[in-house]
Length: 182
Image (cartoon, rainbow, N blue to C red; front, side, top):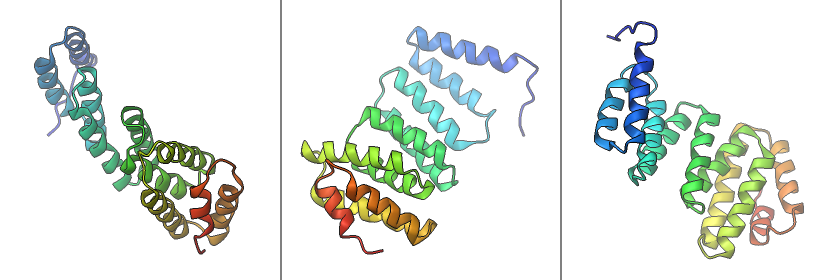
């Protein structure tokens, strides 16, 4: 059963939470957040806010909460919300294989070629700095095209393949894309 708050009653709790965060009172803030989280029914959103809260205290557990939120958003087919969280995660871990791979798949699913290519460029940077292996690159690209083919026509996948193949500076990624059979 949900508690019905009088107008403004819930706002006081969030204001108190902000004060606790600004004073560095982590345990108190987490306790109050747990209570406040009962007013939401969206588990992914609760995890995302908890990640924000933990991040404000430089707690590494924030990454786990963000990952859980992004996974749930993806599972619930809330692709844009999932993308937002994964993009935020990339600010914390710029060359994380799982984050980059999932973003490629989500961009393919939504048919966002510009974001897809931007992510490929980041993968090239990771590959160039030896943070991502050639096998990982090929797996990411292959999986993203499989997602695209399952969601869109061959024409959409072919147009992205052509677009990626023509982009300069993608090196081995461009070659990996050229090898994909559609």
